[in-house]
Amino acid sequence: MFHEPAAPSQKDPAGPYKMRLGIWMFVFYSLFYASFVFINLLSPLSMAKIVFAGLNLATVYGFGLIVVALAEALVYDWLCRQKEAHFARMEESEDIQ
Image (cartoon, rainbow, N blue to C red; front, side, top):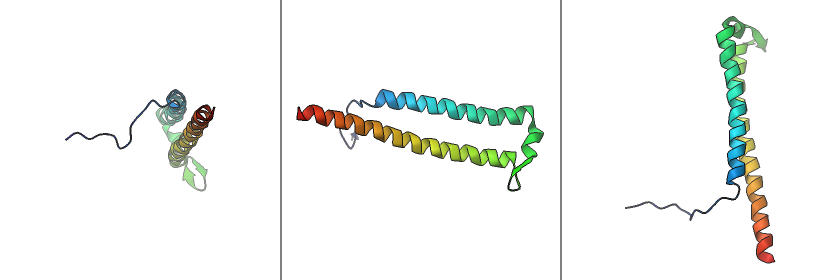
């Protein structure tokens, strides 16, 4: 018993755009996370400093990492949907002509 894809797959015209966008977002997040690691490595005591609403830098930065990851995921999804819709409109306009 072989399982086939639920829908026939075809070439995604937005694929290269999605890949470039994903790579740039990964690089941005990696640098953001690396700065967290370097702060811990170079100045671990600074992570204990209170920076916001009684929370220390480690806690605020940690929540920031989570929020940025979620925000990047939502932005990536929105931008990819926009690009897919753009290609779909182009395809429809070619079919009409």
